[in-house]
Image 1: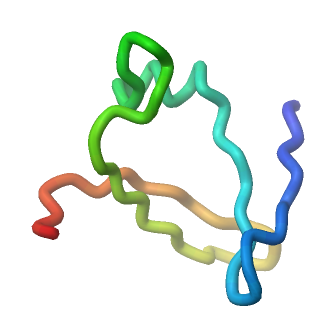
Image 2 (image 1 turned 90 degrees about the vertical axis):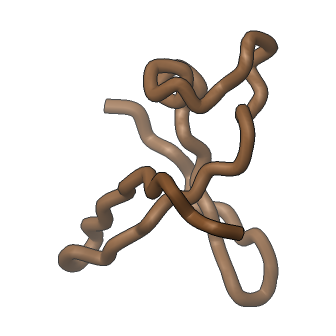
Length: 61
């Protein structure tokens, strides 16, 4: 099981990293391994210590 460190991003938020291999499988990276385009993720808190992530498509910005 891979562990990812929770990091302080700013005063109001924290973040984690997602493995590039997994992002590549989802088609979210370009040929150079950089994030391709604008992608949005919906994060849901399910239970104590449990969240889900869902890629959201079709967001008008």
